[in-house]
Image (cartoon, rainbow, N blue to C red; front, top):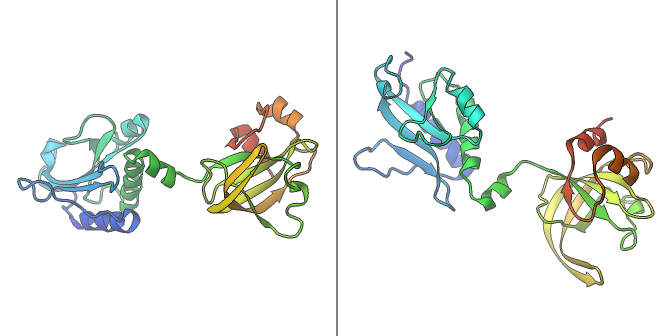
Length: 254
């Protein structure tokens, strides 16, 4: 057995403080070394560090050990991990996807922090999950009747555009240009969102803008609506929508 080393505890606390602005909370007088890490908005726990005797999780071992309980969002991942050294079914929180990780050096700190991130996301509120989600790829429409999108990037690689619901900074948008073009023309990176704007006319209302930066141009004959229908199952682009994996792969080929 590796020598008990509670320095992992302080390193995890420092990681949580820097990344999530979370401070450990000591909630039980009868267990003064038990520390909870939890969300500030919904108060749910995403980490629980406990000082226990090893035999409580592994009868073949003895001595004191710090463990970290985290919640995973994938039962398959949970079942894989508890087959590996240093991972156990959640002690004191055995229901659901909780696991216990021993903090004695058996599991590297980087892997522990990565699983703490997974737990943070798995226990986050709906609003927080949207904030921390990874960048996403969107297919968005543009109507030449309202804006000369065909020549939008002639003079500048960055323009302001109507922000669709759910789109965040660092997302990728593929711009589908409507009739008479009827094809995807641009790949852009979202560099700024939530720019206040008020515009309303028949058939079009805009309340906020985003800035998008051109990353790639496509030949108007490359991703036509006919091809989108036939090969990728995209029959219409009336509003922001996700990009099918097969289309995403085709759009990103050099």
